[in-house]
Length: 237
Length: 237
Image 1: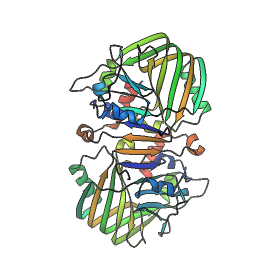
Image 2: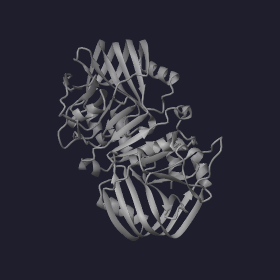
Image 3: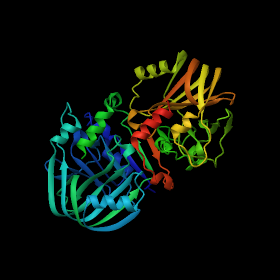
Image 4: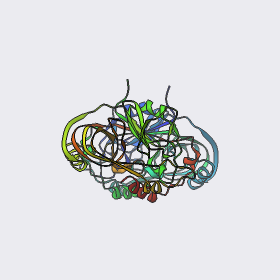
């Protein structure tokens, strides 16, 4: 029996900021903690999205491939999908969805899983280029990101809302990834316009933060918190 | 078989800042997540310390009592005790212990359980007065704290080191509580001087943050993060 009340996180978003991009958990292990999620792979190989227990990677050439169980991730989230709230939404933007959630649900201080399935008028995503050592900072990677857009796209958005208190551990606010149904386009969401989708929300009782305790790079890193917060705001906007 | 690699936290330190002092988890439930820990009880009833599976409360009259399983807590930590590192320390202060840990262990980015057992030249603690509604802020409670000191005290310090990234979710740095062997004095550590103790460290791979998801006070609270950070720094110093 899986536990649908918890969100699992391996690594922190903070550790990506100074460039700790080495994978520290096998994706096969990550998938034991959920069938749904988002993240990235070793060396920032691309934008990962986990749907129905399968991990997909959107690489910087715009292609989508499945991620093998023995590939690794430096930072990822996963949870077992079980929607608490479900509603249909038509002809609106991310801003309208955020407003609706803020006014109708008291989830502002909780971690919440979010899933949108259906038709989008437009989706704009980005992916990052796989990096080589010595790794640059996350901000430098983000400056060099590749942007994709698709009109009249059918697909799924998966991601999380995280409370402001946890900015640094993760990106506060909404952090969403996309994959179209044809498995031909996706990535980290920059913008989207909804045509007709089903929105599902899954508030979590517990967030489980797992650290890469075997990584001496992580353990010895000196994090400058101001830089971490500024870097995340810059790279995840 | 208990899991000694994880630290459990119910509630956040942040929620105490604006005065959300109502207990939201039974202490009996908390004890399922650990035999060792620290926290407080409903209405900030005092400073709680969990040793060998028993929860004790140091109240503002300086007395120590056990906490019943059906009492509740708004904010607490617990873990199953299993020391990874153990060393003897004599004739020094908290500052020296912190320096030793910082120079000899690469735990700065991890949550770490800490336990000191033995003889102290001096221990200075505080406890808080149980509050009534409408609850004041944590800073106002801290201004009215009661301070206790004991020379030549035999007892146990239990608490945690938390990475700076998690300030707000908890108090970053060291957060320690004390209970003497006679069960007659203890509380939240303000200062101490070691005579001869055994120090035990337990770095955690996972921190499990559990939210009071049934509390509408918590869910609807508007946290001012600057105030939260300033309030914690002020109240937990």
